[in-house]
Length: 176
View 1 (cartoon, rainbow, N blue to C red):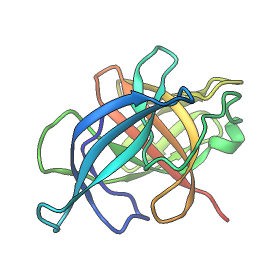
View 2: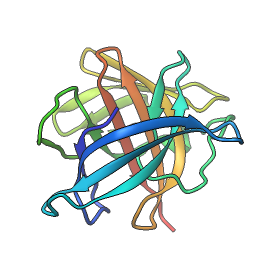
View 3: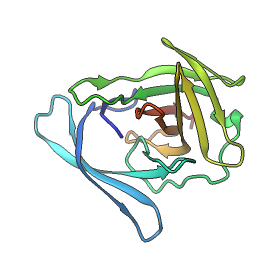
């Protein structure tokens, strides 16, 4: 579901997520609880809780940031609300000390994706929180949601699982 990663707004590089468990709360929301280490901080770690969401085909994907009472907008978002500049982290499938750094991409109004070494397409399923992002030969299916990141920034995010079992996160920083 996730590997080592960073985003432009974060002061830490998040490393070695593990020791996880998932549970359903009384409110019906799904959560992933795990421990997280940080680059250049040795064995110091902290517990983390991220919300889990089901894709339209039933797979679970984790929200990019620690939960802060966000709720999935079941009516979704318009293409106008979603399009824009995102920072994309592809978690891959490797188990290593490699940090998955964000790549700047653009979800364009015409349904294309352009960016640093990446091209593809995207579609949001109207009236739902679901999104499909195709990068190269891989299609990722996931959800779109608004979150507050650990630095207090409002974001529009997507979390999606690829048909190659990779997971991607996209984060767009919203103006206050």
